[in-house]
Amino acid sequence: MPILPAMDSLTTDTFSIDHEALIHFRRDRLRAQMVSHGVDACLLFDPINMRYATGARNMQIFHQRNPSRYLFLPVEGPVVLFEFTGGHHLAIGLSTIDKVRPATTVSYVAAGPNIAEVEKKWADEVGALLFEVVGAGATVGLERINHGASTTLAAAGFRIVDAQGPVERARSIKGPDELTCIRQSLRATESAVHALRDAIRPGITENQLWSELHRVVIAEGGDYVETRLLTAGTNTNPWFQETGDSLIAPNALVALDTDVVGCHGYYSDFSRTFHAGPDAPHPEQKRLYGLAHEQVHHNMGIIGPGVTFREYAEHAWEIPDEFTPQRYYLSSHGVGMTGEYPYLYHRNDFESSGYDGVIEPGMTICVEAYIGATGGAEGVKLEEQVLVTETGTALLSQFPFELDLLGSSG
Image (tube, rainbow, N blue to C red):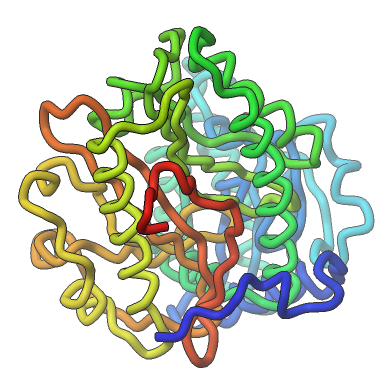
């Protein structure tokens, strides 16, 4: 499949966003998917999904754990935001929300031993709204609420299903304003990674270096970093060790996965590996980097509209045996306001973990590579973020690769 230039070279007004069109596009996509999945109304607790559906934002990380605000979204009828105490004013002016009501926090932390009574109160409140708007026996898409609240609502006569299907399928296709948000998030995160790269030197800790990413992400209007994936030297192998207080050694590799929830709440997700110096990279470091670079670019080349998930797995880069045991758990994945549908698996994982589907225009996908042998000294993490177009893909991430690690193959 052809890989087009980065999107910024394809538009003359890169960062002009129609926020009204943006939130209505997302809400309407979700409602269309609810119809497709036979869901009459959704009760959303995930703050990212609430933000997707309405644009309403409030303490996003806090509310990922605390069920203290939620959204009622019917296919037809009023959209009601049940907002956290003291935050009712935050939704003023949002045309996607018809009414704001106080939320009932359904958690043991808030209710203590009275949790069953609070669950009943919650179910009575939202049940009355469901009866009024969608009627008895309606199918309700529910997410992330404790078991007692769910069963109490089901006992009121509603059919409870998981909201993940319609939400994930809605989010998987991006509209024009979403793509502008993504590009702006990426450009800001790339500025942060440039600052991080410039700060690399032997003798500082991983935490000190990682703080540069946070500093610029926040200054550029981003939200937060979702993971702690910056490591150096032996901490790069195996992957998924977390950033800590280890000192960066001379000539070590430094690997980063951004995982930034950036501008407008859109995920900026690319990975790079650097060399700490002061000497030139040694041949084994170059070999690892070259293989990871090859994996990413081979797999970018087979992504395109109409390609099935199974076809992708069958044609994906063949990981050498020495690196197979520590392969990244995915080959590629969807991305939007976080990592999302679809997951594209390696060939040797497809039968046990994979599922089929079709890559569609408007999907944004991150192509992953981790190359590190079991017991090896170091590993290399690389990743690119692309848009699926009508004819192939367009590169969204623009941060350069390291020519000294690519060597003569750069």
